[in-house]
Length: 167
Image (cartoon, rainbow, N blue to C red):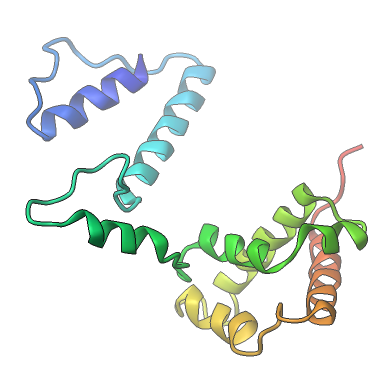
């Protein structure tokens, strides 16, 4: 119900159709309020996400060859937390993490913890890319097996200082 309301007003803004004349329904229970917040978060992420070939149409005059080239060039947005985490996961073979006793789920949590730390590091107004480039890319921290091992052990220990397992 809440998604339908959100989408109908969004569609109206895009000129697809008129919004319904009835008053919008507001969430009444705590569960509905929680779902409404989740839908709001999802919609804001969708609005911020760059268009992809699945949800956008090419502009007139664009050739198919250009689109293929853009799709083949994988780029990391170093100001995006998810892309930075993906970069780390891409550079760190899963078998190495597992050999150090860290499963894939925990590795993803460590990567996210690290990237969030960088984002708020000493100069929170600086862009994430500045810190990520300085700490990971320029020194090629994840370029060697020893570098990856040291990085994982350090940040696993740092994360354990902040998070305690639920028992």
